Image 1 (cartoon, one colour):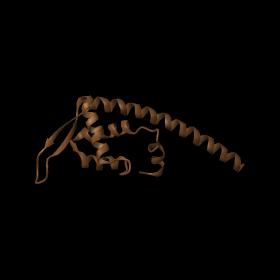
Image 2: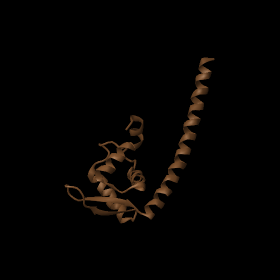
Image 3: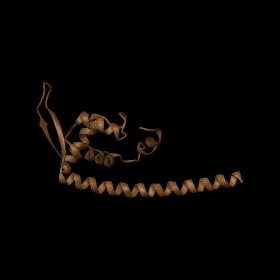
Image 4: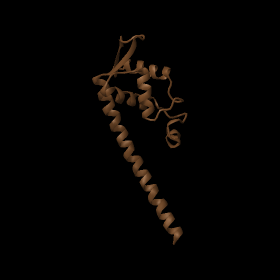
Length: 130
């Protein structure tokens, strides 16, 4: 995760739980997932090992299962132990759509803020060069 991203995602008062849930729903949208595979997908989405551990992941998945956003089952296969796999539900898809729309709105507002800031800084720089 970049330093810039960390500033906004690691604050004590900042709740990343909902963002984590949306990321998990997205990862499960195309295929079923299991713990370590989901952790790998989350690292691609910007989560660091410091932010996310296996217990946080499974606690979040259990919560999401209680809310009927995902389902889980035990998968047998290979020489190793069974593993729990997770799959998104229709409710989970609806929830993901809802949160993606919220995030798009927030992104638009943030882009306006940054655009306004950039305009001010450019104007300020132009005046100082004159």
